Amino acid sequence: MSYDLIVIGGGPAGYVAAIRAAQHGKKVACVEADRAGGTCLNWGCIPTKALLKNAELYQTLMHKAGEMGLQIQGLSYDWSAVVGRSRKVSDRLAGGIEFLFKKNKVDYIRGFGSIESEGKVGVTAADGAKQVIEGKNIIIATGCKSRPLPPLPFNGTSVIGSKEAMVLAEQPKEMIIIGAGAIGIEFAYIYNAFGTKVTVIEMLPNILPVEDTEIGEALEKSLTKQGIRCLTNTKVTATKDHGDRVEITVEGPKENGTISADVCLVAIGIQPVLPGGQEPALDERGYITVGDRYETNLPGVYAIGDINGPPWLAHVASFEAFQCVDGLFVDGFKPRKVTNFPGCTYCHPQVASVGKTERALKEEGVEYTVGKIPFVAIGKAVAASETDGFAKLLYGKKHGELLGAHIIGDNATELIAEMGLALDQELTMDEIHATIHAHPTMSEVIHEATLAAEGHAIHF
Image (tube, rainbow, N blue to C red; front, side):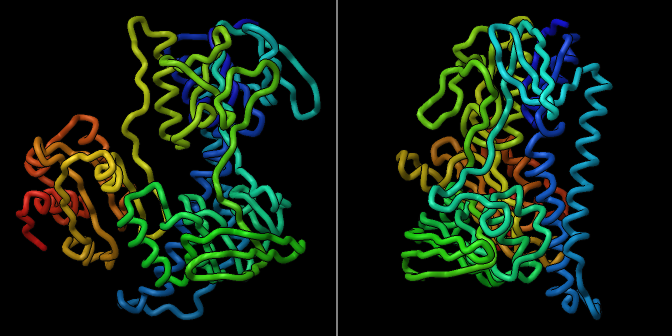
């Protein structure tokens, strides 16, 4: 059978591309080695959010119940049930993607995909059986996996990546996390909330180093209060895995020596997962290089999502899926490259941002105005007992256009959508100020921060 499009990979880039092409009336196959939804739905974004919700609820009941007039005695949890709920959530949504494939008449083929030759994809099933399918166009959307620390290979028990961190049969008493990006910080929050003693090691000056410096500093203070030990500006100089315990030797301003734990989670980044067969041109880091239409150097082969390099985000992958597929099948459509995209970290307090950081604006010599308002100034935040954090908006000094938005606090990951739209549409502080924000809502922090940028904050 010949297809108009074969997609290798069924994650948020692959399944979106397959469904979008089917909506254009094309004959489509999606090849997936694991399960529909890819890493994000099965082993990343979705199951971690289920774990985070459990952690946040447990932490709230443990530490805020009395403040809210609630009396709870004998509060406990079942670790296996906590993990089990996250797996059920993933299974449910993976089944939903498989249903959408059927609804849109996408042929869903389980197996490892490889590019055999021009227009031909080999699919090797789990039992070793192989078939070859043909397609006019091929999209590679195979994503990435956890990157190991060279002297400390993963073993699935004492040294783990993010996948194993979601399904540990027993909760460790102590955990070391190497890397303080979004993945490392989210797992630090989850395990700490349930009582694991967590130490986070980051070689850069701040946790969440890609975020605005002030945001990273504020989050470190909050997580430290919660009991998480954050060792920033700290290098790992030696490692030793004993099988049931890991020793990490570090050098930094807060710690010089060896620390140990039951489990070490390595969260230093990710690495590409390439399909087999013919290999397209790669950059120096091993990611597929693409042109303006997401095309590779192989005829009729395109690459979208994490496999073509940063930013490694599910929503960026889905955006690229739309751009690539519409570029293939819609006359006159010119694909867009990713420019503005939100970044989110789902610990508590949450962190979300879009656009330039203050650090970047200073480096670029851009004149800007800062509007900053703490959540404690927002009525809804006080009523909900969620006053930790602030919103920080950066506006151009000359024209007043939004340049960047940085939020740390409750529901930050929901609030950032408005700022993404404002940035894309080049809205100014006057236009955002003129937009009525419902009261009482957390979104008022955006309105008030805009007023602060004008020097006219009302409630602070």
